Figure 1: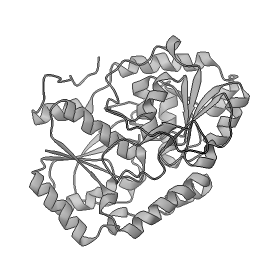
Figure 2: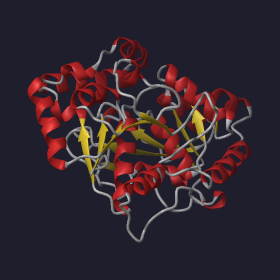
Figure 3: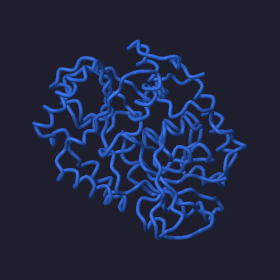
Figure 4: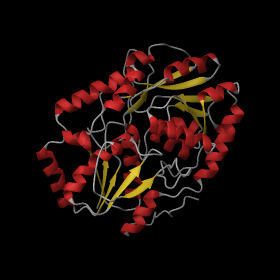
Length: 361
């Protein structure tokens, strides 16, 4: 049994964990997912939800809040920790895959031996910076800013990317799982430049303005990753006065389907966004980062030719040729990615006839 440990604080941490679980199950592996926030007190979750909306509405406040945030593992009640560890024993977990550093103190207390730390960002992200552990985990990097490489990846889908000439003439604009950053201001500029847009809104007022060149989509604002193990409920806002008809992605998150057909994704450079970029072969137009780790993500993506900063792209007159070049670079790089899920399946010896080789070709 493999245990995947995520956090619902950021979809860029949680969704890659869900993707890994799906790829492993497709290969016949037994997998269980634990989300840290399921074990936190209700008052802590209420504070987290409130911060989500505050961060969405004020990016400067979000940046300040990130610097001040503490170690979430210290909020885990003693009884919750005992229940977590009892569950691991009952499931006879053999290997842990950790997407949030806040799980490490619990794993250390449990005496876990086979632990992988899966870094979605290209440098050590805040949850790992804020926790101390004597564990010596194997580190799996889905991007490595120091080496300038993509050591491993998690397939979002096994489908081939949509060919450049078959794509919608649209841009996908969003602010990551919490809707943070300057994407709304940039959307106004891009619309003025003549681009059709798909914009991910995060509350009703974000989608109030009607423009035939803009489609709005939303994640259900009442859903949180600690409620279930499904992908975020996602739907198009067709009537500003009514909620969308939300659907749940099968095998991957629904917003990825928009990324697959777009000319580019315009977003802050979160790790989950970069994973989508790789597997859709969709360039990323990089907006202001959320912290130092996202700044390194952006630098890596530009250095590899996978994306371009908004300012640089604006300086080219919003050239589509620049985006096409990045698409082709991404498409070639995707063929050489090392599949982390295949590595785990090979190690556990649990695979079916759908076995995938470690290298995606």
